[in-house]
Length: 258
Length: 348
Image (tube, rainbow over all chains, first blue to last red; front, side, top):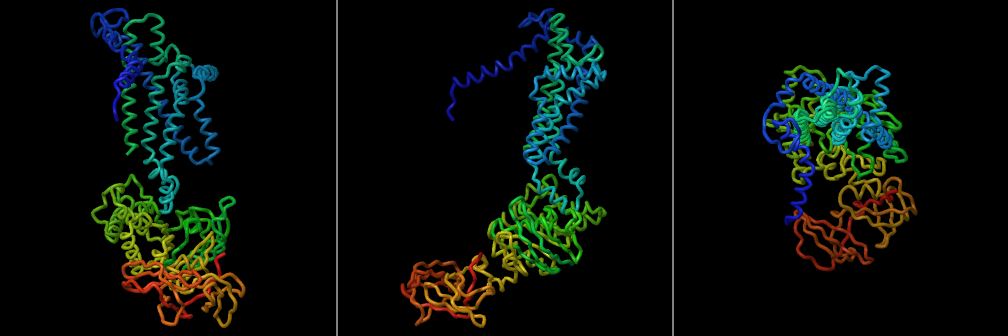
């Protein structure tokens, strides 16, 4: 195919527009100054030292990781079970039920947040890890159900028939045939769920408390008080972890394509 | 060793009658092919037997024991799928061992039986190969090994050779036949390929539109087909249409456009009914004083030559002779023996 210089330039501009705001954060984290300024006048690691020194940041990071891990796990268990159940429904019912399951993806997050806040208050879950885990799991279940659903749809139904003909009971078929073959889908969904939770800020703002807040919530609070390069250090940490997650998801997804 | 009996077994999917009530008894150690075009119900019958599909009515008996309600895993049948359905995340040995592991056999026993099974199907050396890395013929053998290693009471095969090329298909047909003769096992084999059915079967059940039209040995079906459908489906055939004018002492007379034809009367034939005279191409001879015919086509097929002949009224017939027939005269005279002709009812 003949390549067009104009098209290349346009594509480059679009890519820059998408990526530059994210990349702009990173140099600021290495600034020596006290204000956010691009490009920084001098370089240093002082804001990284400050980040390390403040237990609030470390605590928020650990909270985020804990919520992402637990929420991801809960989402994987629920979403996988949902996908297995959905796959057994007759076509029309499946369409309807799938619509319900992807509801959280379609509903405005702020609406979910208000509803969850009201519920969490009555259960005393505001400001608790459990509340955040439940909320993030709810948000991530549709992703898991969809990715596992794709794996299940690609599974030859005759494999289960063959196994049952060879004498295997349903649970054994699931353990030895179905599960190993949809595992890449489950793993991909797990990474997606964890990354979703790690990035999530709206629900977290509503459900965080003084003792339990995730990293995005702390960033949000700090920016409102004073916008120092310290915030960009936290943001850079988030970017790196998110990229690692995306790469992991890609690797697992690549295995599925084999 | 075990036989199977289907008693009034039928299945409908919604308004579609996939299988009309079938009564069929398969003897212990017998190899029966279900032969028919797609949609004839042959795979439905196989899936009913395996337990993959629940019947709408009727019973399946094994040694007189009703197994209609049993799930597939309690039937002890070996199934070979058209697509093989090998477990893609296991190697060859893993696939073959699966049914034995499920049965909880000792590790050493499993290893011994898997090795013996691989050897029997000439798969030694491939034990640790992932099944994706195998050729179609090798995959087919693994599927067969996996089904046989559990010593099934009944072996079920659903067009297992469909994906193989012609030469390989022939080899495997003969191989399956030899294995069956060496160690007879009740087998139900689904195919739409008449040659496959002829080569391997003890008996063939010809199916059409959810019905078993006729069941019998290959020779019986070839010599005495029940109707024109069976005649067309097995072997090459000349079918000359007409009406039955007389039936007497097992012989019938058919009035057609080429003149009256006499032959054996098939069961169910009625005077005045639409029928056809079946004359196999190998029974059409050249003979002085016979019917005048014109050669319109000559096809050399290797060991035989097929000639298409046009009679005076425009009816065409195929004639097959051994060997190479040098370009014959345009005009020939042909005949056949009345004893080789069967008058058949038209298929409904």
